Image (cartoon, rainbow, N blue to C red; front, side, top):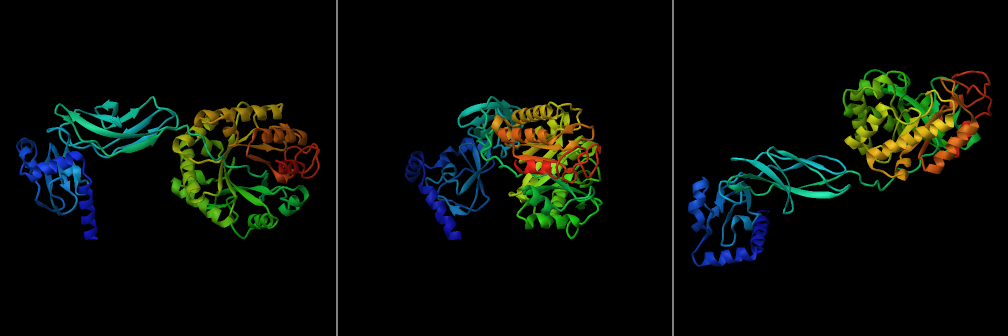
Length: 481
């Protein structure tokens, strides 16, 4: 290995510039680089570099106002001046002129928007007046601190920067390079359409046999509800039923045996949820992973509602950061967030969730709204208006086109009578389904299969819709999505 490294250094020395060759020729006549030592020695404690000298790794020398440190032991030769052989030397301090500051620490990208990139770097040694940020040879910023934002950039463009410190004596050598990209890039791969998947809840409402419903309606997927906390950051069905071996696991086995798939919903309006109980994003992601390992879902749906998750921004952020981990560990499992809406689109909490997901870089496959329980007298019109509001919010946050936003959207309705007595008839649900298909939405669900049975005048109950209908009529429409 030592021989290979030495050979590499020799090859690097051969590949010098014409200026380096000239220096070597001059040195061969006896006029070595050491003739420049007197001025350099006045600035640096390190001795001047000289040819035909043995240097050990870590030795420091000065050359033309810059201090260098040997990367490996070697005997110098004419033409091997430190700037000519980076395999042998690295810059330790100093700049292009004597008395200039030391090299700035490696820069990093700390943020980006559609038109700007923010940088930070380590402070230089020596006397520093300020710093200049360069893109190639063009100066892009000049600041007194160790950070800068370069503005006026194009959307989804990539830029490479270096930083130099300066004072009255001159500039330092350039920092290492850093590359950043502005946001607003077109999403090249929309997540793909998910099969219509009505919610099925095994906790109450005389849950039907999913295989019987599949046979009667042609539906191929169900959204299984709900995963809650059974104490602390431990997941369980409804907070009390085991992940395996219980009624939920048996239903999922039926669905998969019949050729179907499942979406698993976490959270909901009530109950003891994982978001507030898991102390960190990693802990939340770990709880979700337990469910994924036990169930093998195609989709995980995070029903973020109420004051404990939706309106608590600490918890909202914990969930979003946890979803980054979930997606990274399960790239083939789609990630959905489901939340309430107004009749014209997401409220302030929903808008915050959308924009924060973008800011945090959370790879959410689908944003699903629940257009009910908002005082509607025309559920079709209000659902369309709410969905258009969601589309506009997604476009604004992500710089998407209409088509790109629709491809990340879903609708989760409530069949029959809602909690506020809003009416969604089978005919209206068919209208909503047709609209969702026509716009390219990728998810459709409703609450719930348990209620997809007739009970005219029955009100809002757990095991029927409260209206006149055929058995499984809403499920059959959803299957056609």
